Length: 336
Image (cartoon, one colour):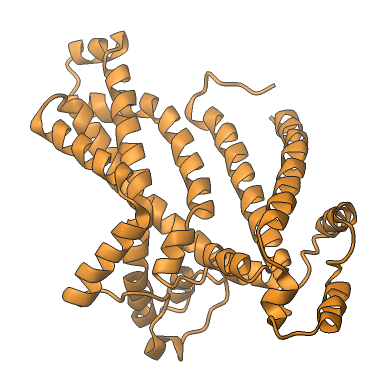
C-alpha cells in the first residue's frame, strides 16, 4: 500500500507541472494589462513601467514562469497585486469557507441521492422510479446560477425563511469567534447554538444550489449499480434462504454497489471545490471561487495562479484518496 501511494504521488508531479504551465499561459492570454487595471488609464507610462518592474511583469515570460515555479517549491505564492495581502493567508482564510460549502453540498447529495437511487432500483419501472429519475434529469440539467437565484427569490425574498447571502449574520458575527475557519465546527466547539443556527441557515440555500447536480449524478449511478447487483446470483440465493428483503437490499446489494458510487462521490467533491464560483458569487460566499473570479477581473496574477493551483492540488489528492479507499470497501482489491 505504501509503495503504491508513493508511486501515485510521483505520478502526480508531471500532472501538477502541466497544471502550472496551463494556468500561467491561459492567464497571460486574457486581454488586458494588470498594471493598467490596477492603476487606471490615467497613470503615466513611467508609473506603469515602475509598477511592472516592481511586480516582475516586465521580464520575459519564460523567466516569469521559472520564478513562479521556484516560488511554488518554497510554498510562496507571493502577494496580491491589488491588496498586498499574502496569497497563502488568503487561501487559508477562504479555503475553509469553500470546504464547508462543498462538504454541505456533498452531504446533501449523498443523504438524498443514495436513498433515492436505492428506492428507484428496488421499485424499478414504478412511479417512484420514474419520479426519481425525472427529478435527477431535471437536477443535472438545471443551471446553478438559475437555481440559486430561484432559491433566493422563493425562500429569502418571498417567504423570508432563510438569509439570501453571506456566511454569518451581522448581529451574530459581532460576538462570534472563529478558530478553524469552519463556522459550523467553531460554533459547536464553543457551544454557541445561536451562532450554529445562524450559520446553518446561511448554509442551506448555497448548499442546495451547489449540491443539486451531484445529487442527480449520485442518484442515477446508485440506481444503475443497484440494478446490476440485484440481478446477481448471490442475491437470488439470499432471497431463497428467506432473508428479509430489507436485509438483502441494504446488507448484500447496497454494500457491493457502493464502489462506483464512492468513486463518483470523491470526484464530485473535488469538482465542487473547483466549480463553486457561480454559487459563491450569487450567494456572496467568501470562498476561493469568488476570490479567484475577482482576481481574474482585476488581472491579479498571483491570486489566480495561487488559487487555481491550490484547488487543482486538492482535486488530484482527493482522486488519490478515492483510489486508496477502494480497498476498504472491496477486500478483493489489493495494491502492490
